[in-house]
Length: 295
Picture 1 (cartoon, rainbow, N blue to C red):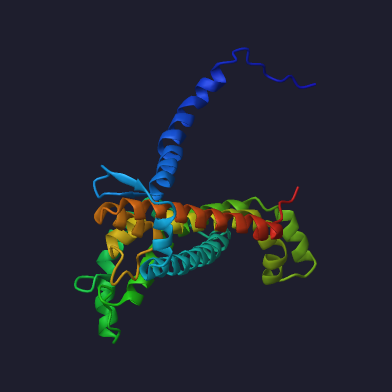
Picture 2: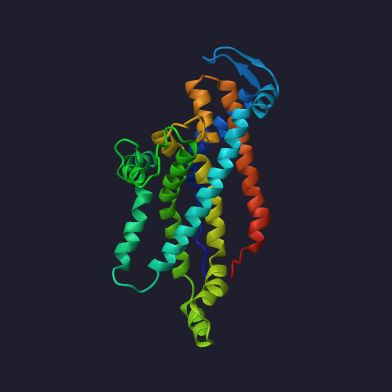
């Protein structure tokens, strides 16, 4: 019978998790409580005086056409980024998992973009697509495409989607590759002996076994698109032109830090938290039913 380790010190476990508890309370729970409190107040730009106004800030936001436009932009942006990153990462992981010469080098190169900060990734792509100095921007103009994302909102949104997707593909690639390498080779060999082709094997065996990884990445990609793409947008477009790339998290920053509208910014933070919580709950409610965890 296996002996279980016994820790006589009853206080040590609490001391070990205390730093993490303090970090969570100070940087996550307390700011969230403050946001909820400020969202119910009307505060002056310097935060010196405030007055309780109930849900007035939320009503004002939900009747603001620019805020509704920001919600729509965020939905399009997050769904497109999630779809692109999952598709491209899965294709790359399947290719890199094959026994080809130099596969380790390819895997390392594909992981590198994840090490870059979002703002650095934005600056790198700026040198490619900046209308005046960008190499690819000049090429597009030469072949007849009038490329200027400073003036064209659709081009600006397309560019931030591409850069945000490129940054996240590496993260998805790592998990997909690990998932592929954990699939028992005996299952694939048995299917090959039964005469199944590569496409049949992938959709009948490989992809269902990757469903836990795919579900996890869908959740993480949506959270990434909503919260972690701030640096890319700030470096490339700053929400413009004409608010075409102003997603919810960037509008919170603009209204709170630049326009000093603390009440509106706090209400937006609360709404953003609710939207992401609902999206996550819906994923666990409906998509998780199609996930196969094996065992």
